[in-house]
Structures are given as C-alpha cells and as structure tokens.
Image (tube, rainbow, N blue to C red; front, side):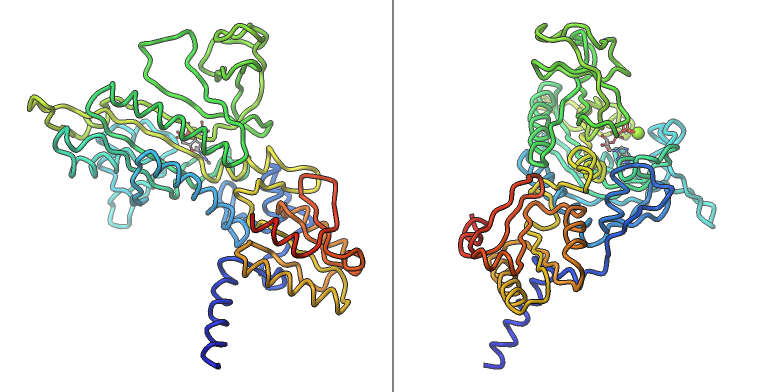
Length: 434
Ligand code: ATP
Ligand code: MG
C-alpha cells in the first residue's frame, strides 16, 4: 500500500513539471509595468506576463511560461521539417574563424560577432551556419547516391544588430530554425524547394498566423529561387504590397511594384501597402558554398560535381513576438491553442469550502486526463485573477465560484470571446478530452 501511494506521488510529481501547475508555485509574477526602456508591445506584454526577462536590449531569458510556448512553436516546426525529410542536428555556435574567412563572410557580414581569445585566436558566434554545415556534409556525401539530403537545427543565433527595439522580434541573441538541403541537380533542388515552401506555409497556419510568401516580380527567370514569409503586423520592419484577391505579395525594398497598381498576377485587385514581419525565408544558394569548401560528389557518369545547396530559415523567437503582436488585445495576450503555455486557466474565486473542494478536484481531473492546466489557487482577489488571466492569455478560462456552483457547475469562457456559460464538470471534461 505504502509503495503504491509512493508511486502515485512520483507520477503526480513528474506531471506537476510537465503537465499542470499551481500558480501559487510559479516563481514568476505578473507585473503592472514593463521596463521603461521597452518600447515594443510584444516585449511589454511578455515581460508583464512573466514569459521573458530582459537582460539587455535584444537579449531575453525565457521563463517557465515563455519556455512552454517557445517549445511548442519549436515542436510544430520540428514536426513539419521531419515530415519533409529533414534530419535534426545541433551544430556548434562557437565557431572557428577560418571557414568564415574562406567564404568571405568574415569581412562582408556586418552583424557578425567576432571574439578574440586571450591566446590571440579569433572565433565567431554563429549567425547562420552555412560555414559549419557545408564542411560537415562534405565529410559524408561522396556520391549522387548520397543525395538529396536535408539537415536542420533549432538553436541560438547571435547578431550584432544595430537596432534592437522590436523586443523578441529582433534580438542580438535569438532562436532560429535553419535547414540546409543538398542536391545533385538544379531540377532536384527546385522540386524540394516547393515541398519546403509548402511546409513553411503549413507551419505558420498551425501557429495561428496568416503568412504570405513574397514573389520576385516581373517573372525574372534568371533570378535564383527565394521567398520571404511575411505576417501582416504594424510591428514588422518590412513594407510589402499584396493582393487581396490572390496570394501575390512583394517586398517593396526589392520589387518595383507600388501600392494602388493592379495585381501583376491576377489583375483582379489593386495592390495594398502594409507593414509585415519576416518570419522566415528560403533561398537557393547555388554552388557558392560547395565551391568555397571544395565539396564535390561523383555523379552518375563518375564526374565530380558541386552540389546545389538550399537554406531555409525561420525566426522562432520572432514568431513568438509576432503572434503576440498580431493576436493580442488591450487586456493582454491571446495565444492560439497550438502554442499557449497551458490549454486551461482554472480560477478559484474566494475561500468558500465548496469552491476549494470543487476547484481542487477539477484540477486533479483535468491533469489526470492529460489536459494542460494552470490553476490559479492564489489567495488574491477575483479582480486580480481576472486581470492576470487576460494578460497571460490562456485560451480557455474556467472559473469555480459560489455563484457558478449554485448555477450547477463552472463558468467557461474563451480568451478570444466575450460570451461565457455555466457547464457541468462532466460535460467540461468531455469537451476537453475531445
Ligand atoms: P531581417 O531582414 O529581418 O534582418 P534576415 O534577412 O537577416 O532578416 P535571415 O538571416 O535569413 O534573416 O534569418 C532567417 C530568419 O531569422 C528571418 O526570416 C527572421 O525570421 C529571423 N531573424 C533574423 N534576424 C533576427 C533577429 N535579429 N532577431 C530575431 N529573429 C531574426
Ligand atoms: Mg538581418
């Protein structure tokens, strides 16, 4: 019996970390004000909600709530990258300077963080990883039979950005997913490129965002394939024009297209100008890096050839900021269910014995059913619990109060809807189980 109880406790304890949490135990607290030097909405809300902690301009730490969301964004990206055949790796972020000198990036990339050791040796902090991934793949790919291959990682990047005023959307340290693909021919690259592009659009969709892929204008066929993925938000740093009738979209920094002109693709609507955030991009790097590193494979006729390399980036932490910018309201964050830190925010109002008993029981029921729940069991006013819940932005709010119990159950309200209803506990559990 004792061993049985002990095991239950162990399971429960494990689940406390992974699945459910009492707000009284959470070390972070919400804040009324963000630091005065913080200008962006995303950082203000994320700091106030206790998701992130600011270390300096463009550098943030991720706290329990923020980390949960970040990991969910990463997992969605990971699933879609695995689905197109990407193999996950983790590359070093502290790099020797030699490969960066070999490609010319040592002198040409202005955001490159260079470090000098006390021994006089020079190092680089990874800002993108062509210089590392190309020599890795060169060690393993010898023949056309080894191609195509795609590898990716999700990890920290470092850039000496001049302007870091967009909160987590432009960091000096930030999380990126970067994938690299290797092909024996242009034809094979083009085939894979379209698959990767589709996977990108699926990722943004799963994150609750509408992303548009910019297109090179004027059907310039000599240009290499590339796309930027843009989400409309005033907090974005890019200006784009897009068509409201079709998927056409162009970055006005590169394109000659102008607001008010008719869409060059469908001709049905006039182009609209908007601010957008670049949440990813995809490129044909051609043979630049395979030539720089003398990376060749034997083709079908036994000839040595340089593979074509593609690169595919997604700004993971920028996505988190973009979601906050695009979906929050005046009260706080509105997380899409797919990346919310928890699914249910359970609020117990008052010290009534029935309320305490019912809310604790519901908390146990939700957690044993595998439903992620944050239980606001703190000894604070209902008003404060409401305010914090709106700020933190969990999709479903469940209130247990004397009033709701008299009404025959608990009060259920979605974060993004005004209407609320009283539902019976069995009915609620059924709904969440589905
Ligand atoms: P930007 O034009 O916004 O500086 P970039 O062209 O330098 O972006 P890449 O080097 O291709 O971007 O990086 C891939 C992705 O990483 C970008 O699409 C963006 O989503 C994200 N990203 C780039 N720089 C930052 C940064 N400083 N902070 C957060 N995310 C970033
Ligand atoms: Mg940049």
